[in-house]
Length: 112
Image 1 (cartoon, rainbow, N blue to C red):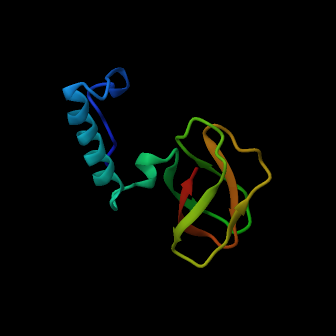
Image 2 (image 1 turned 90 degrees about the vertical axis):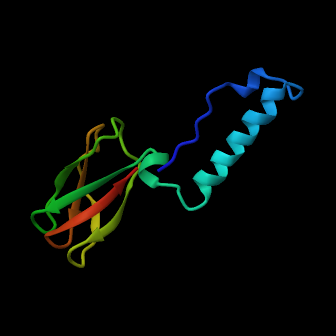
């Protein structure tokens, strides 16, 4: 959930600058805090979680997303029924993917 931020561009400082050590220390502290169990897929990757209701088994359905680009793929991260989600035949767009599922169900997708 945390993002690494630095108030100053340390690339414009030299290692002899007294502020350099201070800001590098702050940066490294933020890196450690961010990496140690706090990396979130939705905050740190170009991905989005979507809850989808599959209305009919084996019927293609458009699933809207907010990536504003054509996704590369998706993972099923949960469903209310045992199912397989698979690609439909319609080309994905910058705001929707098209999938089918083996049963009608509610499922969660990580679209990336």
